[in-house]
Length: 104
Image (cartoon, one colour):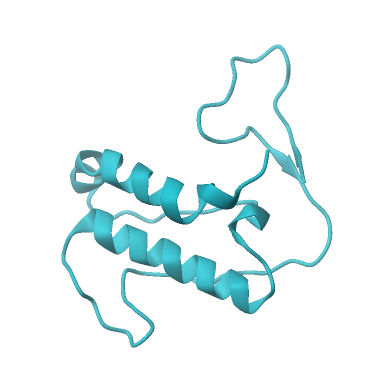
């Protein structure tokens, strides 16, 4: 993958302005905060987000891929306030589950 960040732009924060990639494509269906047995263990937003990230990683692994192969994630949030209040914990979960293997 080639990360696309124009040199004259302010550096991207935590992401990239674009990515050029080639090869096999894997499309992961919408993942939610339940486990492999379709059971929720918590009502906590950040904990469910972390579980959803683990689910994404598991689907990628099934395809022989890993989080460092991710090109794009789309999040659907139904409670903006809860999301904003949980940003620190969600960010920590993202770094632990997905970003730990991302190579730049």
